Length: 278
Image (cartoon, rainbow, N blue to C red):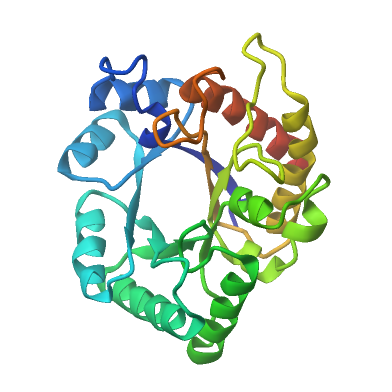
């Protein structure tokens, strides 16, 4: 059987306003830059043009959408499949969505995804039904009770770290559900601490920040836990998820999010190599 594989996916969001506000690269320029930087795919709410360019450049597509309206699931899933996606990341509902409703939405989402022929994964994210670990685990446990299977999640631990006001090391508080981590295929990694869901990778002069150094052992622990599951023939899709200034993740005085994402991609590759012995 094939060994598990690490696949780096670039997010168009990271490249907002790049190289400068008002001078943003075209879609083709962004996708070529993603490929040139060593990524094998892109993630976005994809469309026909994304598919055309992805096929031209040999890139994979991970779809995306955000909704809490189950009547929209089928059309959104079909649109992402039509755009070339075999996997889709979903930010589901809102922070005030109670567990019974969230569970029903998760069940309906996965039923519709199976009917369409695409794999849906629910992101752990603030201002959604997975805003806290307690809500995430309650929904996942209720889903498993009804469906007899584990719920597939997209893990972005930075949101939970902020909610829980954590200090390093982070793994003892965040890596508490090996079953759900091993079930997942999509991971959004960016340096964080207990006060900020995104901290700079570098100081802008090529040196790693202390916050990144504090965070990297957590990445290796996450990869180790994932690999401890039965992962033969499976892929870990990793997005070096550095957010831009527009939207508030980055700050105007800090290094550019796309330049940081490229550095982060290489750091994540080194973490994988350390864990796998490559």
